[in-house]
Length: 153
Image: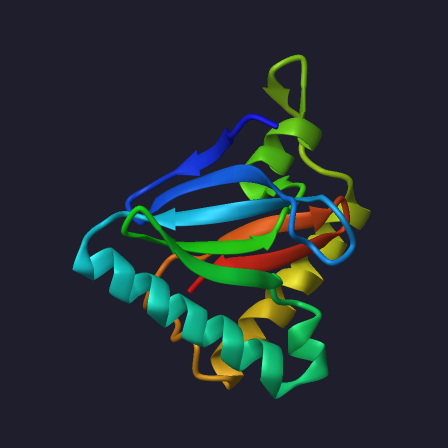
């Protein structure tokens, strides 16, 4: 499988890859590759600390958090292998909230489900001390068509 870039930003690049060493056989994953500089490596370590805290504190929080498979260094870049999500929230809004290029909005049931996930995620992040209101933008990914997960703290 060729490497496909899923996104790029200040932090680094996220690529789709195949994990050939997975216990359940070959599986697709997303790999977040941090830029090779001390500030971005420190940001990645902070994010990993938040993910670890959320994944161990509470079963309800664990189910709302993206699954990290492996952390490794590749060519001096800190890499985080995680579950491959369906798409980011912005792309979901473009795909399901437009018709013929013009915005039509989402169905009220989808808004209700996404809103519940957003508020639950924010509550979990705040209660665990991983996020303070007004501290940083959050990036949400769609695990499937009806569940969101925050991935940037």
